[in-house]
Length: 342
Image 1 (cartoon, rainbow, N blue to C red):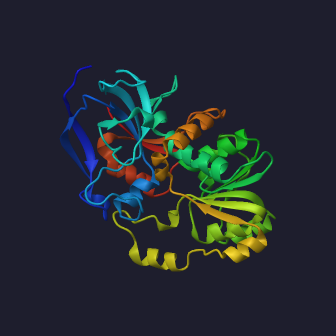
Image 2 (tube, helix red, strand yellow):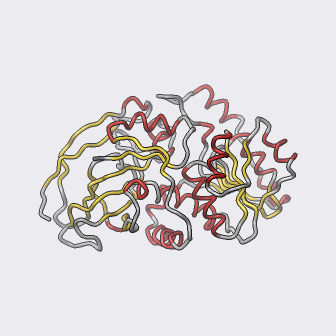
Image 3 (tube, rainbow, N blue to C red):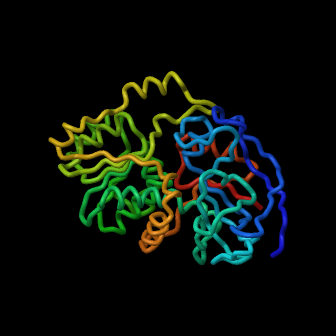
């Protein structure tokens, strides 16, 4: 397909600091004649990293103006002269280091995967980032083993639900935590029986059930994280992939609250960890994009697991990005939040 340029719509912020700065703008996308692939985006996956980047709380936030978004699905509309394993018309899903909230994206095909047969664009946009997060945490860092007892926080969310499914597929015993009976009911409908609705004193709740774990996946932080660490067996691992306790307000960070939470955040002494034989690991998945062989290997391996397509719980039109972001920010979601384009 011969194309020289394309009118593109993108959600762009002038700089990080306030979600209200995010505006829908148009520009002309100049298509590469030599390399790379242009994808007409049909659906965009939302992640908490988008919210933290927009409010300036994400360590990898670009300087100056940027378009948020780490994952998308769509149709290839242009292939450069150097060719690609994809062709015009291919249905694909992909990851990007920002730039996903857009109608068209130019990328290298290393960052694209074929959309599985029977999957919708919404499912494709819901798969890569959160499934990679769960798999990297469980397998690469957590060294999950058959028969282990795994605690997974926010188990009804995008990462949590994929982690629950993966842990079960790898013959471990996942125990999910949520903060409402509605989410617990949702997980039971998904076939999971071991669910805790978190109580105010989570440490006491775990103790009352005499629960201990080999591996914990945490994206919350604070007292919940510390209680989870204290409940690890010897040789247990706490894997941290986020800090939902720092979720900003509707537009900006809650600076005073965040400062207090930062001061009282859990701290781990390596000498104590040696004595107790427990470990803590933390990661930011976006750096994986710079390690292509590892990223591609992980995507291939996780694709071998027998789990269903991701659950898309909330769908918003592309022009309602602010409403979609607020839906995710409020923490009442079940599964993935996505934007869709006509």
